[in-house]
Length: 118
Image 1 (cartoon, rainbow, N blue to C red):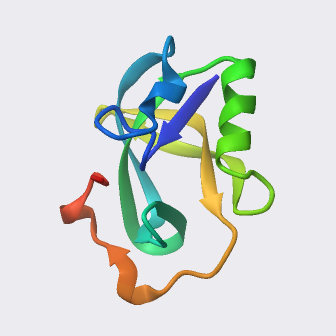
Image 2: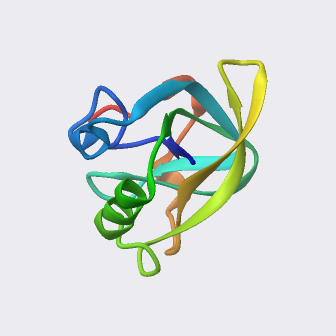
């Protein structure tokens, strides 16, 4: 299965170690979602005419369960399937984590200022 990441799980960020042993498939873009800073970490929510830069990893069931726990799935984020554009050409279905709480529009991060950096 595939996982689209956009924040602290990115290859250059602090929690990428949770993906140790998982294959980085490539860079990807998720359209129809906006990236927001909600604390020291980012979140995505549906947003018309927005897009999010990230990476896709090939993950196993054990890893996805560990990341569910890390992301507080069901309370802070909801894991759901989205379609991303991989390496600018291929459409791929992948899991990602969508924020369940409200975001402040002033904390929106436009695509030009992505990917997320800690």
